[in-house]
Amino acid sequence: MTGTSATARTTARHDGWRRLDPRTLLVHCAWLGAPLGSLGLTTLATGGHPPAGAWITLAVVGVVFAGVIAAGFLTWRGTRFRVTEDAFELRTGLFTRRVRAIPLHRVRNVDLTAHPVQRLLGLAVLRAGTSGGGAQLSLDALSRREAERLRAELLARAEAGHAGDPVLAVGDRRWLRYAPLTFWVFGGVGIAVGTVWRVLDGAGIQPWRIGPVRALFEEFGRSALWLTVPLALLAVALTGTVGAVVLYAENWWGYRLEWTDAATLGVRHGLLTTRAVSIERARLRGVALREPLLLRLGGGASVRAVAGGLGNREENRRGSVVLPPAPRAEAVRVCAGVLGEPAGMPDAAAAELRPHPRAALRRRVARAQLWGVLPVTGTLAVLGALLTPVLLYCAAGWTLLAAPVAYALARDAYRALGHGLRGRWLVLRSGTFGRETVALERTGVVAWSFTQTPFARRAGVVTVTAAVAAGEDGYRIRDMAAGEAAGFAEAAAPGILSEFLVV
Image 1 (cartoon, rainbow, N blue to C red):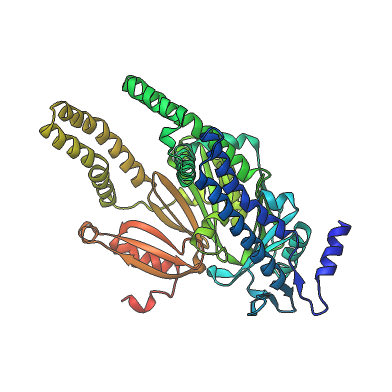
Image 2: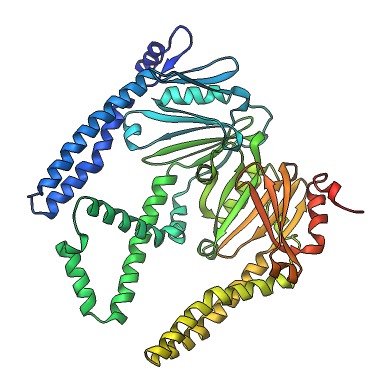
């Protein structure tokens, strides 16, 4: 600790400007990992005799690495930052100076991240931003202690209070059982295989010519498909399950959600790469209780905060998660704690949501049949007419099996539809594969938009979007009765539509 304090003192100048930690230069050495690993794979695949192109690639990598180190040194040498009475300032550049500043009263979130190399060196990257994904300053990298001290300093101007237990949730190892109920069971395997394939292809290796891979494909082709296809799917599912659990553990190990002070919601998590996200209470506009189909069937849910100042849309989706997949009861409790409402919110409000007209059900049934059943049926029928009658029986079988499933999913999507008002909150719910219940602060709604396709107009329904300067920027109430849309919007956020309504 003493050494860290001394470093902080020596890097500070008399005018308040401070430098980044010099150990950040060592982080660039990690850049060599990918090309050296690629060379190792090439050597292994060629039996210890890599082609001349591999050595040329290594030489190019060496030159590029020297350039990266030089650029990193110049960046470190020319980067300074300081916190003044009213602003957080960052100065960059040696030959062309650039000074950027964020007024302290506009700082809405301060995030700390550290990938494994930075964590090993005791470093962290600090990012400070304002609402709406506007100005953002990034310091790459500081000592962990200095980063935490600077984060606390930048958030010291938070106002408003928060009563009750500051700790809203802590991680539980039993939550790992929800990891396989996510996209990563199959999607993660596809991404991993695609990444390895690109690395090998970039190294000049044709993956299908590697001995074990070639033998696997040959054996797969010689065996009966009715046996090998289910076994392959089972292998993918098992691999994906293990990968999903590992990924969940790496992302959410040490998870803790708490009010770090009177007005700042803090989320900390991560095993190898740690992340700490801070959300100012004044920028919270609500929560979203997310229940994807598989997770819902397993009794789980996750929670996102609807808040401004978390960066662009992609950064917002990563930084707004305040609870990973966990038991649904825990998710509902976290929602209530974040909103500052009694236990059960937003479930209690969801039970009182207004249903949508039957036309919404008909539209969902039609879409389910049109997009989920007819394409496969039509393709098999055409191929059966051209090639073999067996495919005609397959088309009939697919229709008999898929049509009831599509209808059931459409009914489930219709039952999920709802909207309503509860106190200061606008509550809306929709979806079956990705069901989401959103509680929005009514004063946070800044605009309304009404969307009707020709088919929706004929059915007498309209999709209403509540525009909010936070989260996804807009939240939709799908297929509500056209006759009540404007009145409901005016009741939810009075004044926005007043001049357009005729009494």
